[in-house]
Picture (tube, each protein chain N blue to C red):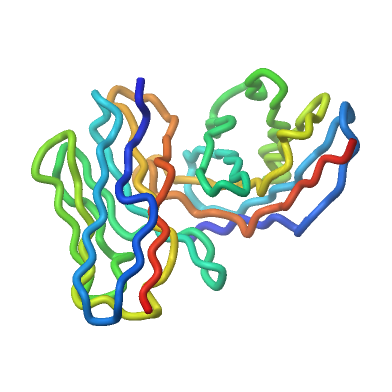
Length: 114
Length: 115
């Protein structure tokens, strides 16, 4: 199994630009999560989906952030416009259906907004 | 509300020795899950071990074991026979059953394994 795949691995952009982060969950997993890691706040949940439907987006910082999951094998997290304070590592994670408790993370996207 | 506390910001351990990483939690949820993850310097988050709140036995995964003491609300990770590759940041996390995967993380413990 390839695991959770995130792209890009690193992203450097200028303030005001649109940023799109991508995630492919493990095949057969029906829950997908977006987390953000910063030095100040640690790891925090932004949004999660069950069966492609957003369940809880209370962690999304503001309207500049949006997430979609058009199908079971793909999700995006978009920041428009980006700001320097959005610089962080963004992780995607997925979990299988049927009561499997394990939550597996991707390698993360290191985002730097200049 | 849930809270995870890891009181050890960093520790050194000699190769081949065992090490215990402390984790205490606070929750009002009757059913929950506890996780440990490893984050090496390369940055990825690696799943290590999981313990359900109703599991009767402590979880084990190879060299990792979770010392679960429900009454004391602690879920310490024990790494046996430490290896140089175990040097990393270790995070304890928990989730409630009704919002599975919505993890609350501790601040982490940095482990350095020395030869």
